[in-house]
Length: 111
Length: 114
Picture (cartoon, each protein chain N blue to C red):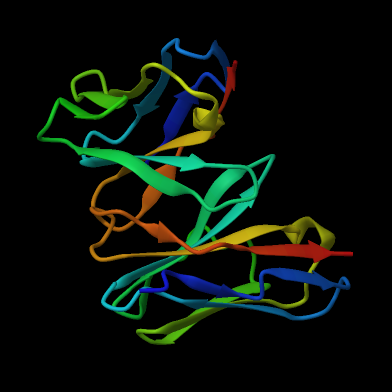
């Protein structure tokens, strides 16, 4: 089955700097790659997603890139703010309904 | 829409007791997922349904776990008998399409088995 690896497990950045989280997946048939943000004690919520027919997608300070050949995708957060502090999860799906999540990255933005 | 609704929000039970977690998906969504979240294992998919039919239950840890979806607006996850290692946050999520669109999560049920 699909295996998603996510790095780093923790990331500390200064406010205003950029944060990058990387994920790799194993199943070349995967075609949907969402990113979720989970604040402490809250539910995971989608922040951005990308499909396999697109290489890059941007939404304000957040961008995701996908390299299908290398089977990896990344989340980029620019101009980080304290409210960006949370756990971020990447995920991959082959469209069968099974969304496989990475282990998560704890992002801490220090003022 | 009120989103995915789970109940109860918190459950504390004694080892050996039966626990039933409930979920109401978003109206119109045809896929429903049950996840378990722990510090050690992260977010694990336990089972998912499409059009009320269980599609993949390979993530269900043991026979003590069972899930049903009797209709499009209701699902249950049952643990019988419960054990301390079942303590976790259990999330229900629903989506409009089978894994190709956003999965909306409920607020979760924090289960503590003592």
